[in-house]
Length: 382
Image (cartoon, rainbow, N blue to C red; front, side):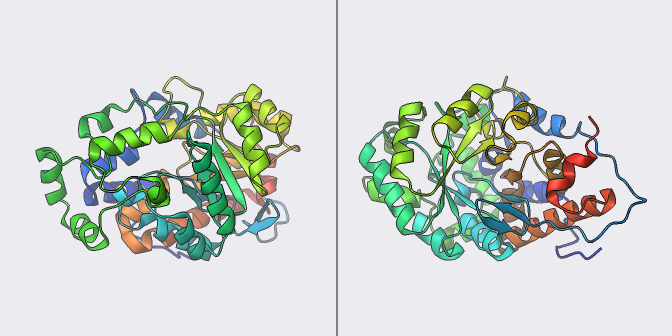
């Protein structure tokens, strides 16, 4: 088997352990944690790993292919990079690093409204191939301007959030005083000093900011003012009227992220949504919710041939991607895995993580005698 990645880190768990040693505690706990008691965070992955697949060895098998068609574009793998906020806080320039790697590997990168690279910069890096995830501004003018900027920058897919009617209750982030920039408590200062490479690179690259939101932000906000600005600017709850307005405003594809109930999928389909991402925000919003794979299992039989069904939350490695696809999901997105990679390996982290996931997934396909990604359900043990 050809290894196109750093063999010192042959698993996502290896990258996670390395990342934990390289970045400040407040940044790692923001990336790694869920909400409340982390029940759903753990359950998401555990339920995926309950899935079993049965190989067929003594059959004719040609070379397996990872290529997967989605919204008219043929990607080189059936997975992409999920949107993550505050990426530059975890490792400087991480959205740019990941966007570049995604473009070079021909997989989708989703840019969050509240990450640390702008709509325009990511479009330039990906030659207009990135997707844009919209948080919901309270002001209609801000929404229209963000969408116009995304359209002018050649984004073809808009992702809208259903699962953030309010921000999740995250005890570790509250204790750490997490903000942009991070609150300089004595504990946080000492922790930063213990991570000199992170500190130096952050100093060189400058303080991370919400780059896409800069045109709408008053200058020189302190931490309290920034928090108030975010609370006033974003009105998290999505409803049918908002979806109708967004559908009228956006000419490209619209994907609903955060769908977990049949009710929400029915509504989305009726309102002209082009695809869904079954998601519970990586276990960061509601701790007593259903694992994403269980939600997907109820949605797939009803909508498999109606609209693309994608999924994130709990997917960590190539074998997890295989398990998810075997349940009829068309495409997978991963968030934490890629941020572990960049936090561990810096500029090389994006390429490493994508190459690792491709290798893991290809090995599973060859083992099963699975020729294409759409064939995975044939090997599911139900």
